Length: 208
Image 1 (cartoon, rainbow, N blue to C red):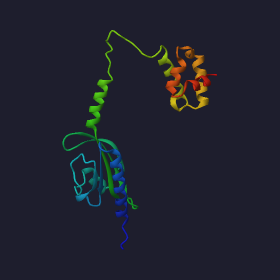
Image 2 (image 1 turned 180 degrees about the vertical axis):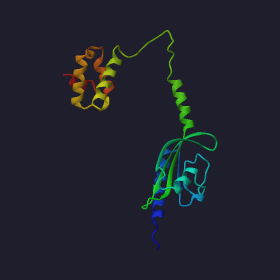
Image 3 (image 1 turned 45 degrees about the vertical axis):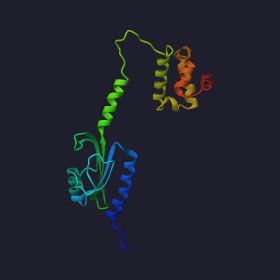
């Protein structure tokens, strides 16, 4: 049996990578594998087809430029692109070289931005409030925001997050809250427990 060439092995492995990425990033990201050794029929695989191209379609201008120049940039990430029907896309192109430094393949990721921009618009609208309204109300106890802000600041100083604080770090936090008077805020222990995602008993123990 004839031993597969290095190029064949690389392309076979990249097909598996493309398949895995396609399944993981479905349905919003098109994953395309190009064989740059055959630019006229470059597309070897296409997953989550958003561009309407087919296997066997030619390489893009970027692919041709990369195939012609081993010094071409290997990773071009998050550049603006456009699908044939006008939808905006964000693309990343990764060149794959053989042991001699020549480009053999390119793995391209094309994200459809349309759905995310629409979702962002909806979320912005949903999350908006009427700042001119006559009523300004909060359901949290007075001082709760100050406690949460101090917890965030404490966690940031030690390179952690509120819910990732260890026992000794929580004890130091509780000392700090006591020193600045925030432990006297009504229901302070409940607020801290909820924000750290621990029990009230744990917070009381840390405060001793």
